[in-house]
Image 1 (spheres, rainbow, N blue to C red):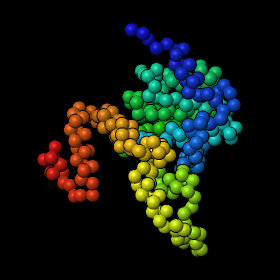
Image 2: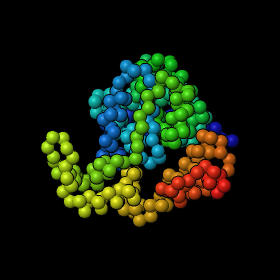
Image 3: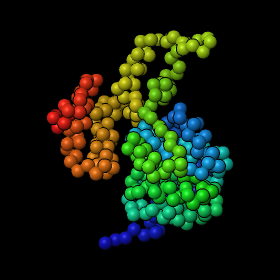
Length: 291
């Protein structure tokens, strides 16, 4: 059986960090998306390195956590941070299978020619939940009191937030990135401010209430996820995108892996029953009888 070589891992890390080799310009897939309204708050917490904690970026799938990370990387470089002191690692890549965070940091040092133990670096671990016992690994890095700043993105936020509280008390700072707000949705579409300015800090009236209602209906149907909001192709068949890219991965991968659920068909039936009874009163007894 073929083993994954150190050289393969180093090449992969270098590929994921294109800003090391040339003056970096944010990639097209990230540049077309304007920063979320939460970006400045996230960046403010990230740059407060005097607080010795890891920063957890929590949020559901497909709400823009990876995009936010790359906007943050660009901002760090623009403010004078040396590009080689900024590292991005997508933990779910198959080449990193079996590697601990310490292993990945050692490979980063060799790939970039730096020392994260003595230099102030910013290390982003994307989709860290795919590393077994990630919260313990991250806790150990924080306890080592290194000058580097560690940031990790985590999907399946509700479940993993509980685990982070249990294992990383006092060592993790959590930042929740929710789906798009209506205001962000309008901004993403370039619709501008739909309200007339009002005096004394009051909320202004809508300039075109019918258009605003049309936008709101579109937002309810498609607006929670940036990728769906911007793509007419996805909007033609949103159920396929949401089912394949979001629901199936949560039901078939995240929840079974986190809780040891073996009967995925029953789990799917439970969620289907809940979805069908949206806005209805459902008791635990009824659910247990139905399933």
